[in-house]
Image (cartoon, rainbow, N blue to C red):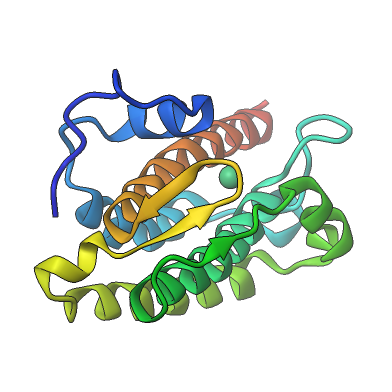
Length: 180
Ligand code: NI
């Protein structure tokens, strides 16, 4: 699959921001490394620490890991649709409503991480089996327009980088607190 070399031609602001995280990077490699990165970033923290929000209304590490998990369900569905039934329309979803109504506040971080790891592995093995032309199959995202399987993986990798950064920042602040 191709790397993202530039984001100049990208019109959608969200796509632009997400893809800026993976310029000249290998998206599949990032996708493969993310479960291990989350494993490392949650090591040594208790479930209580993991579910501590930095501020009222802000996401905790458990919220973020739950979001990784649900984003993987959503993207996994879109990728399958694009491969098997190209040209279909994809709905966007509201991540804050999912967080509230799917009870991220009651989630167990490590259970979510195990599920995410399994889903991600399944998606990567599906992608390995694709023929080169199948990467160009696509669906129509209701906000972002036409998206090929290749672009969906770019977005997935960029989304990983974005939220890993947040998990990393939360980990640092939790460890700082513990040392005082
Ligand atoms: Ni997100």
